[in-house]
Image 1 (cartoon, rainbow, N blue to C red):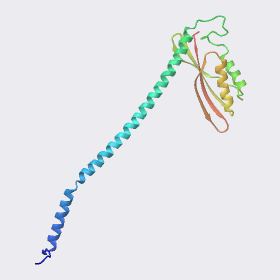
Image 2 (cartoon, rainbow, N blue to C red):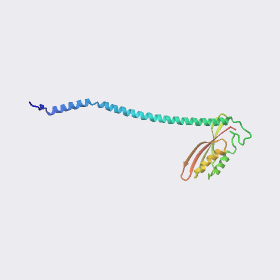
Image 3 (cartoon, one colour):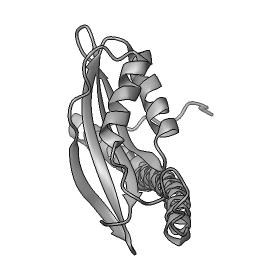
Image 4 (spheres, one colour):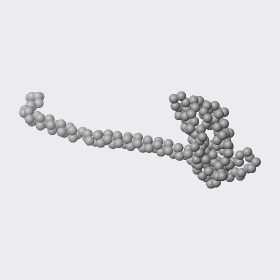
Amino acid sequence: MNDQPAVISMDEAERYALAARAQSAEQSNRPRWMVIGAALLLIVAGVYALTAQAGRAGAERDRRNAASQLRAVRAELAKIETLRNTPIDANAPVPIGERLPNLLSGLASAARRSGIGAELPVPAERDHATFGSLVGKRYDYTIFDPDIGALLRFLAAAVEETPALLIHSVSLRPQNDRWQMIVSFLRWERPT
């Protein structure tokens, strides 16, 4: 008996055809489209999760900003309501809500005492808003000085020395050899 396998003779074309059928059978046994589909699904899910997380973080930041602004608005409304309901005291040096006749000269004096080298410019004055019987007067200054400390001392002195004067906005910018400060003061007054 012969233990050797029988040798089947094939020509070259048959061998290629058999190899092609074997390769086709092997590919059909591997579900490549399922692996590719699962990978694509995983990528899409990852992108969606990252986008959702970024949107959530942005919404949370917006919520915190809105809550902070709401607290600030409520605090300002409480101040205005107090000012509005305070009766005019004729014996007070400056009744609350009354126009200060020397407001601009007082601010100029505070600027000199704070160490600002140049004369304080005349501010742009305008009505900012109304609330009941009060009008918010806004005084806008653009001041240049090499000493940032003098500018900050001026802000503190102006608010401390002037009754009911508020800082509406401040912007400090460095320039070549000096600082530029754009400040808006706000004071609620009864119309004259």
